[in-house]
Amino acid sequence: MTFSTLRLRLLAIVLFLSVFANQPAQAWQQRTNTADPQPSSDEEIFSGPQAGEPLPELSALLVMGEQAGKEVIVVKEEQPEPTLLIFVHNITRPSIGLTRTLSGYAHTRTDDGLKSAVIFLTDDPTEGETRIKRMQHALTAEIPTGISPEGSEGPGSYGLNRNVSLTILIAEKGLVKFSYPLVQPSMQVHLPQILKDLVSVIGGKVPPLESLPGMAQMAARSENQTTAPDMRPLLSPVIRRDAADDEVVAAAERVEQAAARNPAVGRELNRITNTIINAGKLENYGTPKAQEYLKKWSVKYKDSAADPTENTRPAPQSNRESQQ
Image (cartoon, rainbow, N blue to C red; front, side):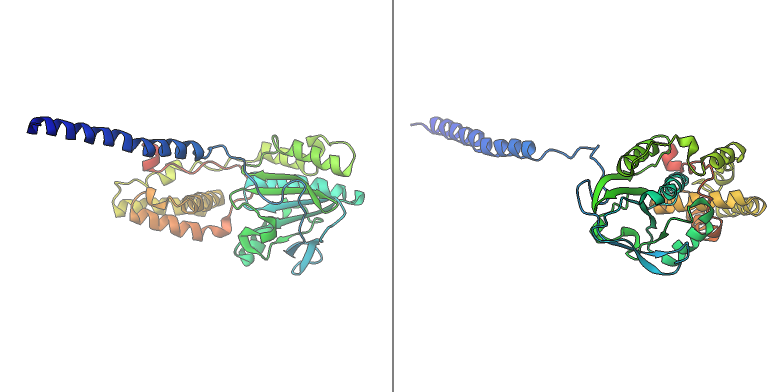
């Protein structure tokens, strides 16, 4: 056998082994991809016990009513009465508007045996109590309203989802009948279904929305209320990425002067700056000097926090976002 013939045979053997040696790895890769699909982007959201599961005992530090300042049990273990629970994860105009209307209706059904409670979730009970008292005009005084002693996560036995705005539970005979995890609460979309399900438990007829407590006042307020000020002309010079420090300072002084003249500007500053900071996007807005002012305003105008029933505008886009 010549050297060239031997070399050709060795080359053929190497090619044969390389082809068939890769087949098991390729087959494994195909099986792995088939058995481990990517998660769907529209997965269902859950918060709190689901239908058919027990409604655990629940305590709250009450802020309103005769028992204000006391920690009381608002849901007993295996509570037999029909029960409505509203957990407020995020205080926004839509979440408080729906809470106010639904709890107001719940109060009218107290004589029918309905037990209700509104529970706010926060890691700062002192601040939470202050905010609840500030907006108590937008809540139902007759319904037990308070703060969970378990912080923003709520009681572990409830399995609440902190990424929603409201968790609403309807229970009967100690078991959950309906559960609503609401990311963006809507009076028009969610309230009719919640009322229908609640009435299916306590009996009676589903009330028309316009007859619910507070709806007439809210409609009148909506007609007469001035829309929140457009902050873009004020904030755009502050968050320009190419602005010099002295330009940022001058623009920031104009913003603070406007807030001194108009409390609505202060409320919008509080909302916008906290939205930006809580979303972890502060670095996208302006220069380091501008970011100092945004952090300053998130605290300075805290006491001017927006009335939850006031119309609001979205936060202005950062330069980075507007270029996308």
